[in-house]
Image (cartoon, rainbow, N blue to C red):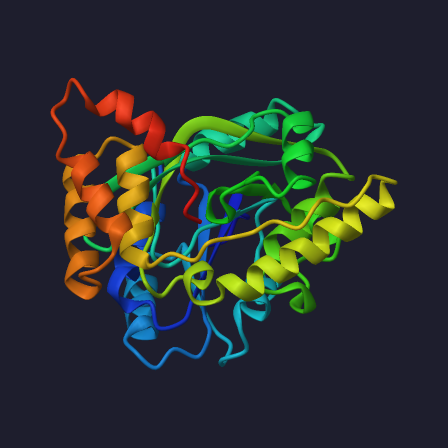
Length: 311
């Protein structure tokens, strides 16, 4: 490409060959064509790098950046350093962007110079493309800041689009804050400009066994608590009371999300998979029972089920 793109999409990948093609195609198929896709290969040992190079050979908008295995934060910062667009978008190798995602997010920031980052709602799917539920995030800056300071979800990391200059001014991602490097970034950006989310689910977010949140949930919770304590201290806010988290398996997490999203077939499939692995799981039996209820009874018991915190 000779002219600078409007948006640079940074896609880090480490052994993500299974879903990588779908992620790449979802970006190349965007209605916003003035983009570049920077695929940062973090030393993959599977077919991720050849897949990325195949797309680069077909489409000049694809830039492949092999960096050797150094972890997610290093890969993200390498992609940002190579980006030429005035906006930087994120996507992961196992997610799929809606065709209008970048066009809507760019238009949102173009119309609001005070806003430096915009995310979106997401639709969670499992490893077999079954839809589980939609997740909506706070929309306004005030709501987002409140969520950030109270351990509530404020953004889906792979859904965001940021102004490149703002991202560089705050120093990008910091390796010492991994695996909560995204929260660390939001807490710095929230003091520099306005943050927002779009209400539409513009990303299909894949839940599977090998996500960072699944593999490093304990470390992520510890780092999250540390970051929020620091941010509250700077703002002269009282520390939050410690939170308890009950661990849950991949299949039970997916089953619960599917129940809450009223995707009963997916809930049944994951509850049965959990029972195959753990035949004595009471929660799996309860989940299966709720998913099999007649339609007229489902809404009432859903409210009860939703009140039981499992993770």
